Image (cartoon, rainbow, N blue to C red; front, side, top):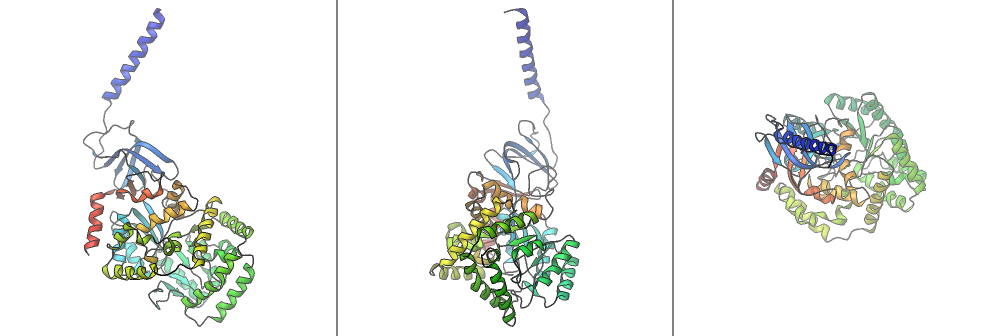
Length: 490
């Protein structure tokens, strides 16, 4: 071996020994009053999976993220071993109602946290009632989900959710005139709502007042497409997001213009009927006809408008399939009923027993199949989707039902990562909070979920919750079980 080669070899050996010495003697880092999670796999809705990560949480926020090999922690830190675990952003349920069963509302914070729901979007209820829960959440940010509210549904006359029966609790305000609408939206804005919810009995003129005010005051407008309008007009008119794809099918039919003319006549003829009865009669008269006359070209035209206007969609597939798939018969669902107040669980179980003995209408299956296919088309068209459930309607346990929604979104054609995005980053984007929540990034609030299995391999793994972190406070499995145990004891 010549001298030059020997010199090179000696240099390589010396460099390698120096590298090892540096690695062994590199100072470890101490983060005072911080929670450190070491060697965990992170799943960000944009970046995807990154293995062997160390996360530092301090003062409720993500202070530092680094590869575990690049960040040596002092043993003085409070360290959680994340080996074999998966960390993702906390989940949103983007369509819930605290006011649908008011007696259930006091249990909903705990149920949401226990099932990894760290943010919710309440889409309609009495203002003083829903604002109470929003204010309570703001006062207790580590023990409650983030709460965004619309206040009451903004409806025309007769209004649907008028408090006339248990199926139509007082979630809405009936507004006879354009002036009444203008006065109401101004009041809601002053009261601090986060968005406005337009409903089905509004006239086009009333709807225009809502969207104009919202646009001028930087509020979003969500809702159902009014029965007096077609979907394209509503989207072009300023509807920022649609719930349940409601009334989309009526505009996708070959005879959509005739259906609209018929609706206007039915609305006029039924103006003295209860709102809930009138709406149901119109749906019964037109929905099946619309599905049977579905026009692919019209549907594509509508989706192009949605994409151009960035009209978000909240499909709530769980609500439309619950009586077909009957998830409430699963052991986990049955167990979740024990966490509800006894008066509610008894009613739900009795009602479910009747449902189990009844035949599912053929059109219900046809409609849910259409919904699922349309969600796939919406996703492929690049239209934003947010995951929501409409809990507690349809015997949907708050929290648990969101995981069912994620599974249905995947069965409709979304990838597991896309489904996760609908329940994390997308609602944050909707509210312009994407720099605060919805991703795993430094400086963002530590609203996080730790899982025992990879949800990218099976979206059902979002239910395998090891721990929930709400604004820096960690609820390990034992603490989560204590929360549920208290609910079960009532």
